[in-house]
Structures are given as C-alpha cells and as structure tokens.
Length: 288
Image (cartoon, rainbow, N blue to C red):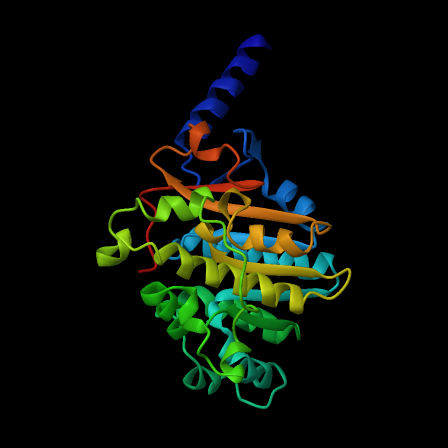
C-alpha cells in the first residue's frame, strides 16, 4: 500500500512539474490566490480596477472572464468603463448600446486603439449583449497632449464645451506621489522623459477617469474599470483621485506583471502593488 501511495505522489509531483501555467495569481504579500477567490472578493466591491499590460493576452482574457462572471453574480448591476475610450466619444458609444448604430458600423465613428479588434472588442460585445453601460472615461488625447507640453494652465483656455470632457479644473495634484515622481526617472519615453509636465499629463488622465467613474457609478452597483496597471498600481493614480472624493467606497485593484518564472514570486514586485497580482511568463505571446 505504501508503495502505491509513494508512486501516486511521485506521479503527481512529476505531472505538476511538467505543467506550465499561463498565469498565477498572488496577493500583495506573496500568497497564492485562486481565480475563484479573486471573483469572490471582487463581487463585493464598489469599484474594480483591472490594471492590464496593454499587449498581454492573458490580462485581456482574464478581464473578459472576470467581467462575465461578475455580470452574473451582480445580476447585471454592473457599469463598465475603460481608459481605451475617450470621453468625447461617449455619445457614439451610447448610440451603439441603444441600438441606434449597427455594431458593424460603430467603429468607424470613434477613435480606437490599434489593438481594439483583438483586445477590447470582446469587452464591448459583452456589454452590448448584456445591455450594460460602457463609459469612455479617458480625457481626449489632444487635451492630455496640451498638458504634456504646457502644463495644467494650458487647459484654462478651453471652451466650456471642451471642459465637459475633462475633470473639473483645477485638479488636485501631488507631485510627490511615487508613481508621478518615477515617471521623471523612466527611460524609453523619448524626449518627454525629463519633462516635468509629463506626470501632470498622467495626472489629468487619472483625475478625468476618476471623475467619470464617480459620475456614472449608481448606488450599490459595481463599476468595473479597465486601465493600464500604472494608472492604479500601489493605489495611486485613479485610485488616489477617487479617494479624494469618496473614502467610503470599497475599491479592489488588480495588476498584471511579467516574470521569467512565475512560480517564484518576487516579493518586492508584489508588496503593496494591488489586492491581486496576475503574474504571466515573460515568454507569453503579445497582442502587438
């Protein structure tokens, strides 16, 4: 009998070692978590920030699957928002959801990211099929570009109509937030990397996304927001702006990162990053 048990354990360990999981989920202190545990916690939230790596197919797949499960659990009392859609495209999105524009035609009426067909179209379809509101939370890129060049003051000259698509001015801004300070030290950001206005451009995006999330969050509903992980990691960015207005909301954050060996957590990468961190092998294929 002992030999049978040992043989089983050996077989199990060999099979487990041979598996190559596409992802593992960790908490912020390095504990492994299951997808089911993440769903359970997220189902009780007021706002979820799913921080993706924009070209990571596992992140896109999981944000779709998580949304699909939460739609069922929360009985469709879910609003979806996304960084990938800019606020001045909201009318077209509304007309799509109201069936005033055919699904096959709406894309030609809005500005879309290049990876929309593979990475974000499934989310839009899921909202469409379930009659969910889809909110374009991001600032129009032309206004963020103005801030990157000339600071917050450059927005003062905008018309009242244009200002409808950004957070109310002036926005609070803490230049000492680690995520904003880090932007001035990043490499690979071209000529803008040393520009002190660059984190301000990030901040106006964060503030605007927070503004529209709060504007369209019904009481006792769930707001499911998709954004680049940098916008919500370490509970900064959009989360910081939300908390300036609503400290009462239960916020759950998810982040995505890549490691060579996802079975060996790097605690320094995880500590305080998010409630759930999806670790994906660096060898995973990219969507672009």
